[in-house]
Length: 497
Ligand SMILES: *[C@@H]1O[C@H](CO)[C@@H](O)[C@H](O)[C@H]1NC(C)=O
Ligand SMILES: *[C@@H]1O[C@H](CO)[C@@H](O)[C@H](O)[C@H]1NC(C)=O
Ligand SMILES: *[C@@H]1O[C@H](CO)[C@@H](O)[C@H](O)[C@H]1NC(C)=O
Ligand SMILES: *[C@@H]1O[C@H](CO)[C@@H](O)[C@H](O)[C@H]1NC(C)=O
Ligand SMILES: *[C@@H]1O[C@H](CO)[C@@H](O)[C@H](O)[C@H]1NC(C)=O
Ligand SMILES: *[C@@H]1O[C@H](CO)[C@@H](O)[C@H](O)[C@H]1NC(C)=O
Ligand SMILES: *[C@@H]1O[C@H](CO)[C@@H](O)[C@H](O)[C@H]1NC(C)=O
Ligand SMILES: *[C@@H]1O[C@H](CO)[C@@H](O)[C@H](O)[C@H]1NC(C)=O
Ligand SMILES: *[C@@H]1O[C@H](CO)[C@@H](O)[C@H](O)[C@H]1NC(C)=O
Ligand SMILES: CC(=O)N[C@H]1CO[C@H](CO)[C@@H](O)[C@@H]1O
Image (cartoon, rainbow, N blue to C red; front, side, top):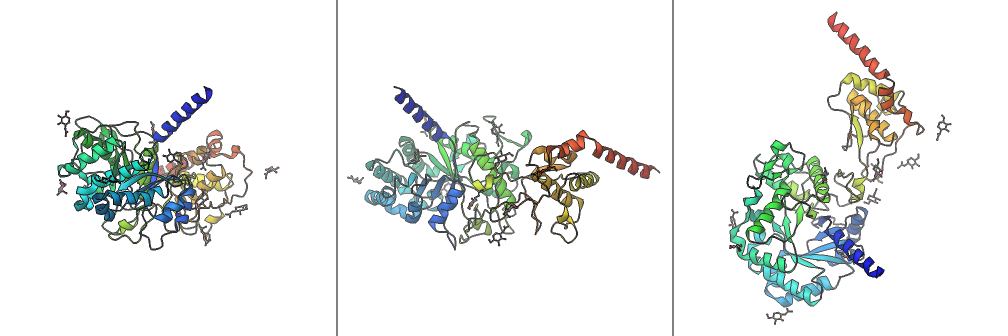
């Protein structure tokens, strides 16, 4: 009896865990020096990426992914669709060669039948649902249909009038394909696969979509987009697009098909026509996306319902044709070095190298230079920071201004004090940031080198006690404030004399 209860409990715990949202990563392979599958898998493991999507069913990758615990979605490339959609035996062969041969050692969880078929290969559209059904039948024959779901990623451009979401509908020319497809997804317990690119929506909107709304940045309530029918407020393009898909399905009377996002991301580099493809925006989008998905907020239409999401993509693909941005959607370069360090503090152990507490203490924007100078003097004096790198001829001398020098001293102090928030106050002129202030050969404490190792902190003494904290020095003893008052008195007396 106790065992039964325990098993039941485990089953429930498992089911609940499966409903947790996850972040996966797409693995495109259009690189001139594509890493070997074992290197790819080593990177996935090091970064704790546990869900991936392949654009094919590459043997090397499927072998390398065996017994790793990583969940894998494989794809049938568009070129193979006509063959599979026209012949159930071709479909059955595909499943036995590409799925049965690797499962369960390789944990294949879904098959993506084609990619954006309606919008990129419309002449294969008539056979798309047949292809899905043939593949599904072959899985049923192998008794794998419960473990492996069949779907087909759609471009969000098949959804028309996507704002307000409550009025969205699928382009009616595709109803002859989409209605049977949704019937199939519903009856087979599968999910809608959707590719969402707020970057393009933003680029094509000619200024109608504010950048903050595309990048999941906090918006003031007056700037949020309101759906006039539902009075729901949308604070980002991603949620609005997912809800548009839910409404478009509901419009065709499908109300219980879950959705996952098979591609989304932001390019980190572009040409002169692509000013918003920047490291900063790519980092902001993907960091905010990950936090948003993992936070289990769901969307306004389906609050609390997970929308698991695959980031586009693992590597920068230098062989991709098209504008520079096309080659720069990756999180890593071919060596496995991160293109940028995501701001993920507090979102769990995903992307291991990127979740190290990557914070720095800098001089606050617009802080009073006199207060900064006093705080700098304190840090290099009583604060016991080794300020020698700030001397003329040393790496951090340039730029020779109080903001840059104070930032170096503040950050060094902050790291020595174990990065507590009190250690980055300096009477209100300092701020914690996630942007590495290192420049040239001036490497700040806490900076991650390209090699992923922390730069050593060269503090003269690790023996400081908490009584050294600027909080106590500044507020408790009041010496600093009185110096300021003195300076102000002198300044005012100069002005008025
Ligand atoms: C393929 O289709 C034919 C005719 O529709 C059917 O008789 C056969 O059983 C199918 N084979 C498989 C492997 O599903
Ligand atoms: C494969 O993945 C599924 C879905 O996440 C999970 O339920 C199952 O336990 C995994 N199987 C193995 C052998 O790890
Ligand atoms: C709807 O799809 C058809 C067929 O691809 C296309 O020609 C048409 O432009 C689409 N309509 C809109 C408004 O995008
Ligand atoms: C949806 O269901 C309603 C009521 O059952 C029906 O009137 C309508 O025709 C259906 N719409 C579609 C697209 O099937
Ligand atoms: C996560 O959700 C909670 C409420 O459910 C909210 O207070 C918090 O700000 C969210 N965090 C992020 C990073 O979105
Ligand atoms: C981040 O910092 C907190 C406290 O400052 C610490 O508890 C946690 O272990 C750190 N995490 C990592 C990954 O370094
Ligand atoms: C990274 O490693 C290379 C080779 O080992 C070395 O030359 C380089 O200085 C290192 N960079 C950093 C920032 O540690
Ligand atoms: C950091 O400093 C410690 C102690 O001085 C030393 O053992 C270690 O090798 C240094 N690490 C690096 C990466 O320089
Ligand atoms: C810390 O400083 C005290 C007094 O200056 C000294 O006795 C002690 O050995 C130092 N501890 C370390 C770890 O340096
Ligand atoms: C802190 C951490 O997890 N560092 C890892 C970063 O990734 C490399 C491989 O790319 C690992 O070797 C490190 O251990």
